[in-house]
Image (cartoon, rainbow, N blue to C red; front, side, top):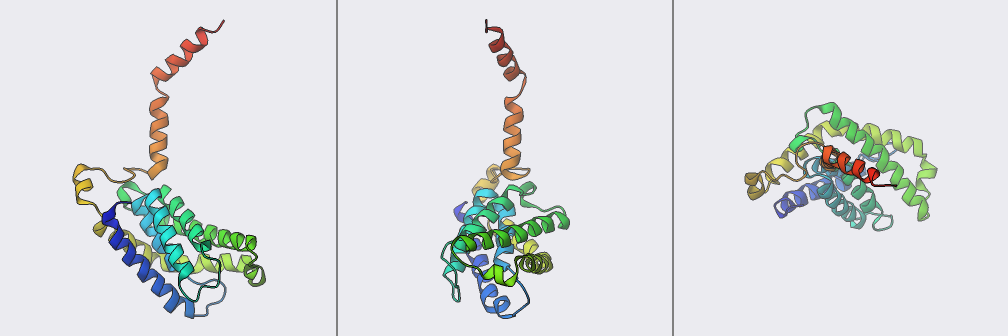
Length: 213
């Protein structure tokens, strides 16, 4: 992730953490708690790409692990948001610009479900059985509902701020945007595979078979 993106990322993470702890954490809603940090990580990951999303997710999760009134093992939420940021970055739209609301909501829905399940799984490994007592199904459904309700108000704003204030002027002038056009790393992987599977590659394979006795 470029250094020009560090200040705006830090501000967005801190704002998300403050809202998470001071506002949504005190609402006493049934089931799960609305996850503003997850929405911030998803929004920035769809602008920065998989590498930037992974770093943003780890930083946001680690701050949440350390911030009071945290009652779980340090690193647990950092692992979850790190993986969610990487996965959302793989689905990065062209030049970080989301073309439809439905595609962004699908990414948020997948992240809400996966993060809740992964958080419960990691908790079970370290002996935290809170999800079992509350009901994992209820946690997943309420997390999905709350995050989808908040996503239209959070994710587009985060993506807009990330594009506008997190841009490196030198890289932008050179046309070197992280991830390039397409779906981030997945698009680059497919392009590389298609180029390597061209006529020259097939010709070498055929010559190799011809030399066999």
